[in-house]
Each structure stands twice: as structure tokens, then as C-alpha cells.
Length: 139
Image (cartoon, one colour):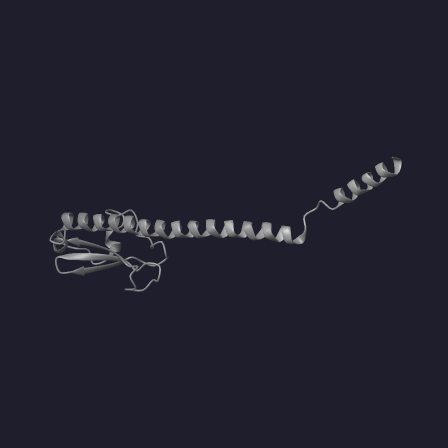
């Protein structure tokens, strides 16, 4: 019986020593963690893009309100957005993509643009606010 007990103890020691993770197991875990991280990253960047669009829309609305207040007080449209600062708009900063907002007078109204992520007119990602008397009939 003594030799059987010794053999069983030796087998237990060998199994205990071999219980570490193999290279393949470690790589599988890393791949799974990578997939989880990429899914989270995709969602975060998608939400960032939506937040930038909402920020630009809110900025354009605030600038539009300032242009309208300028028009009510002076009876004319401003020549540029700098005329609004600081009385009608606290400050006119750049859009979320680092470009200046564009103000264009047209007849009895105006338009204010952010060219969006591509920083160029057109392309489908422009954000525009129309204002003034010409915009009243567009609602």
C-alpha cells in the first residue's frame, strides 16, 4: 500500500504543477478583452459625434437669437457675427470641429452655418439655421 500511496502523491504533485494557463488560453482571453474594448470604443465615438452635432445646433440657435435681438434693437441685420459680441452674444467661438461659424445675409433674413465634420460646404453634414423675415414663411 505504501507504494500506491507514493505513486498517487506523485501524480497529484505533477497535476498541481501543470495547472497554469497555456499560451493559447491567454491569447483567447486577450482576444475576448479586445473585442469588448472595441465594442465599447465604437459606441463612445458614435456618441461623441452625436454630442458634437447637438452642440453645434445649440450654438447656432444661440447665435441666431443674438442676430434677431440685434435686428430688433437696431432695425438692421449685422454685417458679421463680431457685431453681436458682447451685448447680444457672450462670445462667438468655433464649432465643435474647430471651424468658424459662417453668417450670410440674404435679403430679409440670414443663414448661419457649421460645415460639420468635413469642414466643407455640402457633403450632407452641414448644420444650418435660417432666420429673419425670409425664414418666417418657411415654418
